[in-house]
Image (cartoon, rainbow, N blue to C red; front, side, top):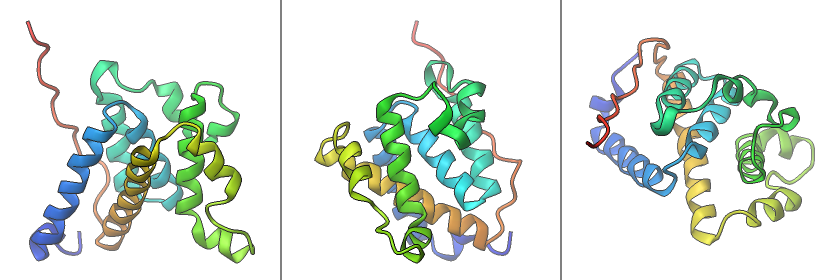
Length: 163
């Protein structure tokens, strides 16, 4: 790693952690994990792909299946994602690939994608989903910029089940 950004700017790091805490409360299931993983794949962030793959596998309730994780880069052709997940993934890709859309002369968050995501998310949920997409894009840029090393991350241990 080039520098320890958590120590170089602890206030900004704490603000990002507060956003993460909010997002995990807003999306307690697997949706947040697959959004973070897909955006990290698009951005080519090895550290974040490693982290979010491991987090998705370790998530409560048995975690994500290997099949769903391996198929994520081809989610449009894979039958094991819900309509809600597909809408969220399309929204995430449209907001992550803004330069591609703009350079092609199109609008990044195309109206058909927005119309589909609105079928599945209310105002607060869509705002939170958009914050989640913005956050993982920021984390990807931090990890890539400071060369965070992939492979060593271990997900937090889940608490034991209640008796």
